Length: 435
Image (cartoon, rainbow, N blue to C red; front, side, top):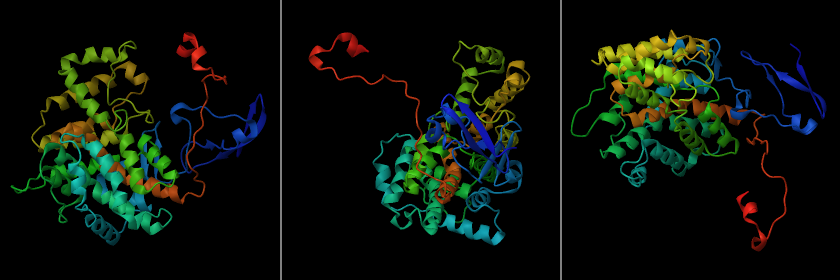
């Protein structure tokens, strides 16, 4: 392949550099386009734009491939743990046993929150959504940890990353406890990352609590699958905020806010809502027909993906875990899960979905697992935020060290009025005002 692409426009011609990655499509460098030819590019939703160079996550949507630092997600899901994957995303390599032990110990001993944050939680309305609380609390951490705010100091960045990964489950559990009026449960350093989260969420001071190993492993697996996913909406938001030099806690709070959107982090909740609306397998054809009708706003939630044009590899993994969780936790005959399986079977045999490559994605099954684990629906996106924090901080740390990084400043294609003169209010006509 040539290392230049020639662009011909009414304003002239230019040669644009072609940047090759180690995998995936090449990218045409357009940073000189405006300066040389006075043209912008127009790419709504950034569907064809590479905004950065990254060595963290690779997705091949056509083949259904997801790699973390080069490792297939299938291998990591089967053989690894969430904290091992977190180490991999942060540092670029799988840890030795001693490195993993040290990393796990660091994360475990950063799980406590400053006691003054308790008053912050009490300031939220009694039934506030846990995601609303998380946005505020995570953003406030910069007011408590002044010793790790120099983004140009590698050690400060590392400490901030450790604190965010460690404290996110504690913040999430406290947000939930506040929303239901129960006392906060302190972290337990004897438990695993996900075991600790389950205890902080479901234990009460008056009774003993024992972590269910099936629930613990299921949550760990989901967290692995959700740890990072290239330049999605929330990750891009973290990078945009970080490009301004904002502190890491503010950047991650911005990612949480972006994740809260129903088109991003709320998709698994929407799947459950859809299944409940369908109700019984007998009604599936009716809803399949509605999904095909362009005039009907109904959509089959959990099918298709912005990037994957094949079966989402995470969906294959989580589908298997879904069977195991429901079987071992006594909900093997969960009507919603049976309905989900039937819906998948019918949709995958339908020519409409086959032609459009609308395969089930990870959200199709994750909500069913959360339901089996007794996690309330309003916490689904919170669980996503805990897992994705690892990816966010890894992407933020990579961005800070990128010598080509500049403050994000997209341009626009202006379609408003051309320049016009101010009209004094006493002589303005109604048509001018309405226009």
